Image (tube, rainbow over all chains, first blue to last red; front, side, top):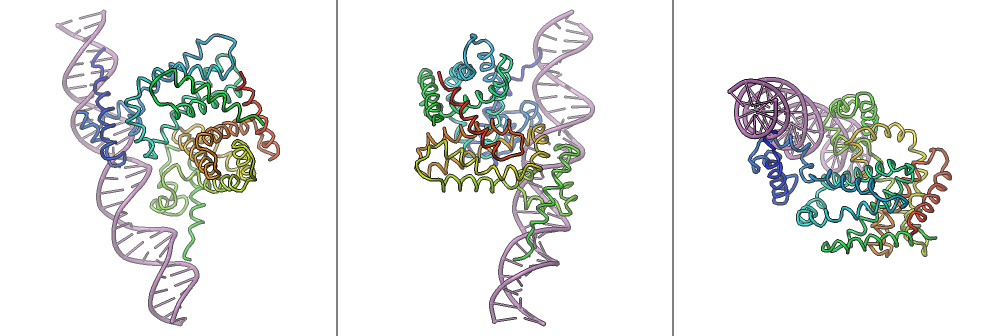
Length: 186
Length: 186
DNA sequence: TGGGAAGTGTCAGTCACTGTCGTCAAGTAG
DNA sequence: CTACTTGACGACAGTGACTGACACTTCCCA
């Protein structure tokens, strides 16, 4: 293998996060990001598809872990359990990524273009989970409902999470599921 | 009042939908849309914020109807009932918009940029419903869970809908809620 | 030691989107 | 009927995101 390019990619990630936070997303250009990372603008676009994508690197790893969790789960569990198990399996990734996630959170929340991309990412993730469920012979409509419900439950649980212990988040997930169950009871 | 501009806006909507379907979203320029509508590119951007937004005109009307349904609902109903009632109140809009919605559906599904915008729109709608619930003294965390669950339920129901009768969709919504209840039962 | 794969720089070009200014249509007040 | 106001529109220049093509370099492997 020739030059890896991983170092430049990491510098681009860090440079973009810094600049977006310093001057705001709209006020920074991709050329400035590239300059701070010591590369050309053209190289930026070889690593990231567009101006937003640089903030969402590593999503494929998350997806692989969760899809793998569904594929390798034991039989005889409900569709929702598979989905929630996938989110639980991903908790270590969330704990590890907490420091940078915190720096990104406010930025994404206050920038419409980035919020849009974040929503798209989680929708794509849900779609991947549906696909994984279907490959486990779960009927597609049921898979969609389970994956959607799992996403809502996880988002609800992670909002109440203090970000420290993995077991804390796991407990919040089961509690959120109970609340959803209660909510749908007539 | 001077010239209304509503006619030009409608022509732009129709021209964009036609061109996007004929040549694809990426292969059509905003200048071409404007030309077919008989206006300037600059006028296009006075009516629509960007190249995608032209396909999502009329979302504010949907939001107003649903928020209004929550605000004017009778007391003593659960948060989820409020949300599902809002979707039910919007069914006539879905029935009326069916013809154009069908032309947009395939286009949006096959164009990543448009899918992203569509997801963003439904997320914004969910956010508006949360706000409406909070103004009815529903606690914010519970409001988020109810609005999220309602969105999942509605999306699940509308997928199974044949698009003809309003009562059919209403029945599918209650059935989807039952299935979600069953799904969360341990 | 040569050769090929992958990363990068350079340059030209397209197109989405914006600021600004002048003009014109359509109401309204006098 | 005239003058004035209010928005919609056209014309034009400009910025910046993103792409295609080509040349060059670096590193690994045969």
